[in-house]
Image 1 (tube, rainbow, N blue to C red):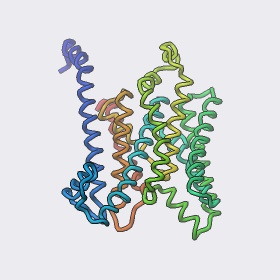
Image 2 (tube, rainbow, N blue to C red):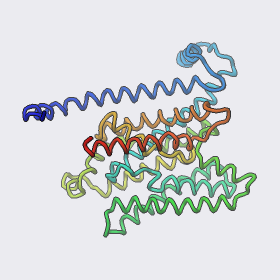
Image 3 (tube, rainbow, N blue to C red):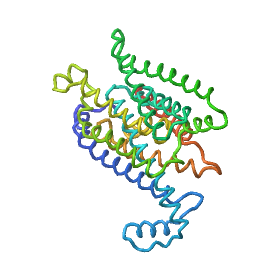
Image 4 (cartoon, one colour):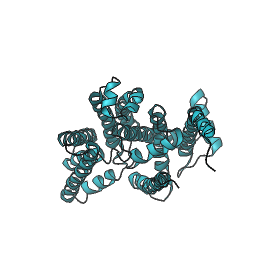
Length: 357
């Protein structure tokens, strides 16, 4: 039975009131999932801690009371697991925020740091540094520079081609450049020493947090924070980029400058994340979609929710990577195994909704 006009009108009037309520539940769910993942990651592993031991250790750390754990357990908890969890949180938050920002500013849900070639550019820079035998600091700097150079080339190509849809050109240019950079990575792997350099390059490209130290987190976290803060502060304006450029300009938004600033921030966060953990794919593509299901498409709520979910997703994947098998699994492979099927599910779900089923 079709809805009456009064019913439809009532539903339309009630929709804006129900959206903030559902968003609050989405926020609570995202925050609850992150806290649960953090506690789980602290407790599980080859040296497992019971909930009581973990609670006593956390209470002792907060109050300064003597810890009931053995020195070995203290070392595992605070010197091994905590740096990995901190690294996973900042990497996941940066990648998810970058993906959400890219999707919003380019009005394309398929855009992500991976699609635009940022990850491949950072990967080529890091692989070149490992091949040259430079220090880890230089490897991370080259990764950062490679990511920035890749997105600069993609944006320049998209700006120079004016006869086609600029968003389509941007995505295609990113895919083409990613393939070219991938070929460069393959060439360096071919030339690398198979006994020393090739294993390092291979494991770095597959992503992982096993070798991350708290000092490296301290160095790269400010860069990711410098990228996240402008994105969060500008999240109201990202909504306006969903409008045609002419309408956004009429509302007083400097579209070109805003888009350039957002690209720079998103690229900075992605390159810093890749320089710390290697190539960890799918986070920037899948997590914003999940956040959109929880809190809606408004970037005022979407971006912070993506940060929370991205942090929890990478920490959960890293915990699975070190506990699911006797040997540690590469983090990038695990996120691909989880992210690709889930993204296909999202695509099918979206298709059914648009088809009216």
